[in-house]
Length: 317
Image (cartoon, rainbow, N blue to C red; front, side):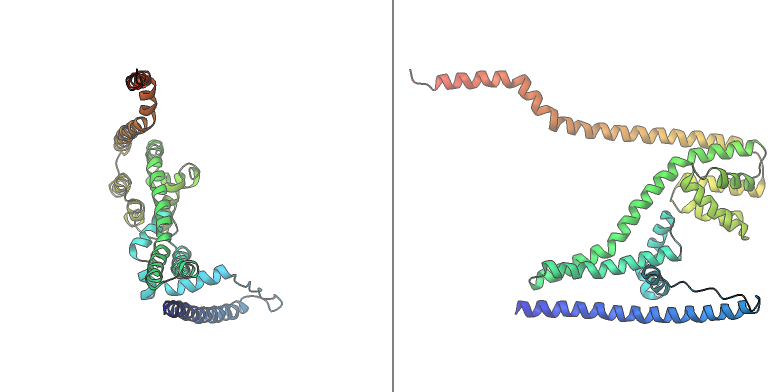
């Protein structure tokens, strides 16, 4: 009876995966037809602008990875896609610097593939019994669903730390460039182009803000992502200061100097806090590792003397 239930559950899971595969193939075929129609329209439009003797460009076939990303992109704006890639996931992709169509589609594809494949692998290797099958399905689906988010959270925390480390250098560069008479726009442009090698995270975010500003957005709108993407109050204060200088003008060297000193003082306090926590942890390590050896060295002779005395007292005369 257990084997029949096991076979029925495995068959149901396989049928569900096959149904998802058929839906994906249908959407992929639809995307390919739409792409061919667009290419045909582009070729007809381009044929009016080039000589007849020039041959048309040869279309390069898409690989399996590009097909998978194109299929996932079709799902992003559906209710299923918005549920699988929610707003907090998109904010997490923003923090990792991959919140474009390709990044969201790849995140959706990896999450769906892992959520389906991990339960199937668990059933293939460990499925014996109804309760164990249910447990494997639940744990496999949960791991497949959450594993991409955990990986992205680790990358986002790393970029947050790197952005916090780059902030004092950014403030000093702004002070220097503002002090030589450059405007805010010129200062940000110089930082984007000349200091991308040392400001890897903040330089990329400033480049995005610069592109948004060049397309017609205001300084406040273009700096909104920069001020909120890493959930850092200091970055928000810097962007607010730049916006105020852009709107009202005035000398900015002294506020930037005070702000830089405050950021460095805060980093010193954070470092002291980390050192205090590390000291407490090292105390526990010393107790577990050094205390047994210290007791053996200092009290070993006394223990041996007590043991010898007790053994002599127990020997008959």
